[in-house]
Length: 135
Image (tube, rainbow, N blue to C red):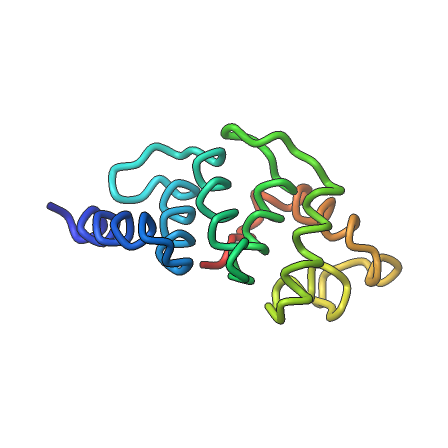
């Protein structure tokens, strides 16, 4: 068994018992097709939501990213993405703060700093520029 598959197997067991970090790890594995899993954003969304319900701020951010980008079983929804980025920011996650307008990256248009929906649009427009979800 590969290292990734072994980690995924252990994360699956912990996630089933409600461990939010393990649930986020499974979400990440589905997002990036790790450990033998097919890329499936709908499955990733399911696991990220379980973790987010327990206050896992990174999962909230990753849900926002899934909705901002769309595809692989998740319908793009900029307003929903912005809401998840806001929740992530309020939970204290730095990337969520950037994407909800609380802090600003260098390459984001200055006129849109405080517009959470603009962050979702920005991410969707730059999905192939190396922006990645954090887990």
